[in-house]
Amino acid sequence: MINGTKILFIGPMGAGKTTAITCISDDPPIKTEASNSARHISDKQTTTVAMDFGRIYMDQFNAIDLYGIPGQEHFDFLWPILEKGALGAIFLLNCDTTDQIIQNSLEKFCNDFSRLRDNSAIVIALNRANENAVSLCHNWLRENNIVLPVLMADPRNRDDIIMTLELLIATAEVDLLPEGEIHDAG
Amino acid sequence: MLGENLAFPPTLKMKCDSVLNDFASSENHLSFLSLSTADGYSLSHSDPAHVELNFRRISAMASSFAGISKELARETHHPAMEGSIIECQTGFLVCRLLKTEHLDAVLLGVFNNESNHGIALWTLNNIAKSITDMLNVYK
Ligand SMILES: Nc1nc2c(ncn2[C@@H]2O[C@H](COP(=O)(O)OP(=O)(O)OP(=O)(O)O)[C@@H](O)[C@H]2O)c(=O)[nH]1
Ligand SMILES: [Mg+2]
Image (cartoon, chains in turn orange, cyan):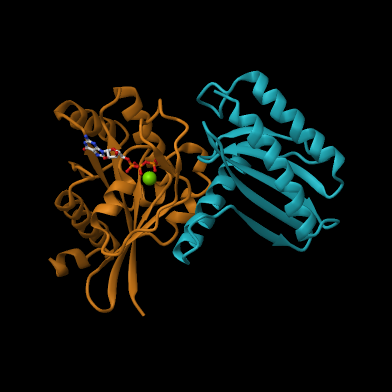
C-alpha cells in the first residue's frame, strides 16, 4: 500500500495546472479534457472538466499525489471535494493579463481555499510574469494581511515545478508542527 | 448566449428549448432534459414541473460526469465513450456526448421510475439525433 501525500494545483483557466501535472507525474496522468468553447478567455483547444491526477513516487512506500482542479468558476462545486485532505496547494497564475484580473484571481482562490491559506499551505507560482506582476502580487498579499511565498515558475519546466513543490512541502510541513517543535526540529 | 461566453444564436437556443420541452412534455417517464457544452456551459433545457433547479450547476456537473466517464472508459480500453448512466431508486439519469461540426455537447436526460433502461436509452437517442441535426447546421 502506497502512502500518498495529497497536493493540489489551483488557479484559473489556462494557468497551466494540467501542463504542470503532466510535466512532473511519473505515471501518465489522468486527465478529463473537453473541447474549450470559451476561447476568448483562454485560447487553447481543451479545458479540464473534472480533475487531473498524477503521481510522483518518493520510494517504495511513499508518493506525492497531484490533483488539478478545473479552473473555470462554474466547476467550483468540485473545489472543496478535491481540496479534502490536501497538505497544500500550488496556486498557478498566468500574469499575461490585466492587473485587475490578476487581483481578482488572487482574491477568488485565496478565499475559496481559505483553510490552506490560513495554514500558509499555498505557494503562489506566477508564469508569463515580469517584476511588475510580482510586486502587484506582493502588494495585494500585504494589503490583505496574507503571508504566502511567491515565485516565478514555468508550468512546462519540470525543474521549476519540482522546486515549487519542494518549497510548498517544506512550508506546509513546518506549519503542521506544533509550536515549539520548529526550534527543536531546526 | 453560448453559456456565459460565446454567441449562441438566440433562434437556435429557442429551437433547442422548444425541442427539449416538446420531448419532455410528451414522454411521461422523462422529468427533464438539459443540454450543455462539453466544457460545462448551459445551452438549453426543458422547464421541469414542480421543481426549482440550478441549470448552471447541473450543466457543469453533467460535463464533469461525462469527462470522468470518458476517462474511465479509456482507462479500461474502451476509447469511444458515447454515454453513461446513473441508477437511482427513484429513476435514472442518462448522459450522452454529442459531437457536432461546430460544438461538442452533453445531453442529460433525467427519467423517473416509470421508465426502464431500454426506453430511456431509446428516447434519449432520438432526442440526441434531433439536437445533433439542429446543431450541425449552426455556424
Ligand atoms: N508561453 C508560455 N506558455 C505557457 C506558460 N505556462 C503555461 N503555458 C501554456 O498555457 C497553457 C496552459 O494550459 P493548461 O495546462 O490546460 O491550463 P489549466 O490551468 O489546466 O487550465 P484549465 O484546465 O482550463 O483550468 C498551455 O498551452 C501551456 O503550454 C508559460 O510560462 N509561457
Ligand atoms: Mg486543466
